[in-house]
Length: 360
Ligand code: BGC
Image (cartoon, rainbow, N blue to C red; front, side, top):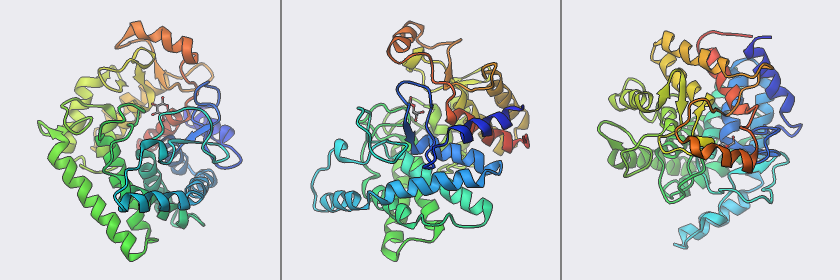
C-alpha cells in the first residue's frame, strides 16, 4: 500500500461517525478531541484525493458545532460592543469532543486560528468540487461574527503557547478565513462589510508590526520566526510567494528551522525536546511546490514518508535531532511517546503528494 492510500485509510478509519477527525486516536492528551486547525488540513488532504464524503462530513460537523454556539457568540460580541472585557476563559474552546461538546479536560483554550483555517478549508473544498456543502451557513456566519469581533485580541498560537501575544500565523489564518467566507457568498451586507474591514485591518497591522528585515515574525514585536508562518504564504496568501515578504519569510524559516528535510517549530521549542515536525515539512514542501521548486518539494515529501512507522503511520514529530534534548524525557513521562498516528501529519502528506502529482 502506498503512503497516500494508507493516509486516506488512517483518516477514514478514525473519522468519527459524527464527522469529527480525532487529532490522534491513541495519544493520551489528544484522545477523544478534534481541533478545527488539524481538521481543516486533514479535510483539505482528503478532499484533494477524492474523499468528498469524508470532507463533507467534517465540514458539516464543524458548522454544526459553530452553529450550536451562535447564542454564546452573539452574547460575547454584544458584551465586547458595550466595551466590556471578555476574558480568554469565556471564549470558544480550541478543541471539541468528537460529539461536538466542549469537554471537561483543562486545555489552552483560546485560539482563533482554527476558526479561520476551517473557513478557508471549507471554501477550498466547495470550489474544488463545484458545489456548496449543505447546511453550513449558520456555522459560517457564527465563525465570521466571532472572528470579526475578536481578531485583534492576543490568544494562544498554533502550538497553544503565549496567550499574551498576537501571533502572525493566527492573524494570517483569520485573514484567509474571512476572505474565504466573503467568497462563499452567504454573509449579509453588514456581515460582509465587517469581515472586509477586519481583513483590511489585519493586513495593515501585520504590515506595520509583524514584518522585520523584510520578512514576517512569530508575533507582533519580536524578530524571531516560527514555522507556522509558512502558512501565511502558501496556502493563506497574506503575503503570496511572489511578494518579497512572502519569499523572504519562506527563505528565513527554511534557513533557521529546516534540517535535512525536517522542520523545527521554532528555535526555543522544548516540547518533547523540540524535534522536527512532519506536518511542517509538508508546509515547507507545499511552498516550494507552489513556487515551482519541484525538486525541493519532493525532498520534503520524501523526508515525510521516511518518518512513517513500519505500518505506515506518521508521527507528530521525530526525536532523532532535538533542539533541547534534556527536555525530551519529561514529556514522555507526562503524556507517553510522541502522538502517532497524528492525522494532521497524514493530511499534510496528502496535500503535498497532490501538489506533486503523487496519487494513490
Ligand atoms: C499542537 C497543536 C495541535 C494539537 C493536536 C498540539 O500539541 O501544538 O498544534 O493542534 O497538538 O494535534
